[in-house]
Image (cartoon, rainbow, N blue to C red):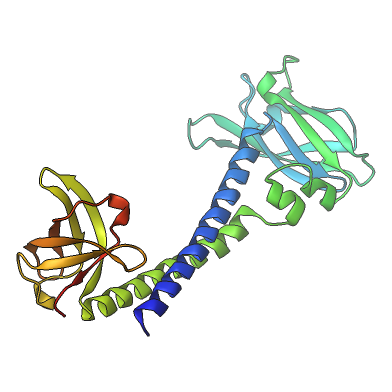
Length: 263
């Protein structure tokens, strides 16, 4: 395969990789936005549905029998299942199951949890259940927009996009390696570093002693169209990579690759 074909393949792979990166960014931003609009102690469920709910224990409560749940409607109930120690702060927590009857009407229902011996209710133990008529209405009600309108979850997107991007990166690396070798065999190399020094402009590229390069050898400097725009003298030849300094005045933007003059 010629260097020209390899250039086209690498450019195409780069564009596909850029598309994958844009899609990943869209999924991440969409997921982050949905988290920023999170409403405190609000959860979503549907008619004839259930929802696992967790909260801190009221101040005077020690066991599950001390807990009382009050709701706006008998069609929405909270059944406590266990009391446990919280993972992060070690607070005593409760876990329960919100059960919405098939007879419930779509709408908003408040659930209040308190100690059986105290009518005072802490704001952190007041929950708002937003009940929707069916699964489709529930899905479109909250969460990332991609999931709401297209059924694309962040997990599903990640399972496709990240492996896909990994394959593109590996493919690009393989093509770049083949391109580097093809160019080196013809006495040419892409410039991967350009910097300004007191002596002028210094460049680095993947040609070296292995390819017959010597200190002081003159190289043609080429632009992105493979036209000669100046000359460089080899300053420090390495085994496979070397540094040269431009001996003609030119701009950074003109430097794309170098080519040996006597190959």
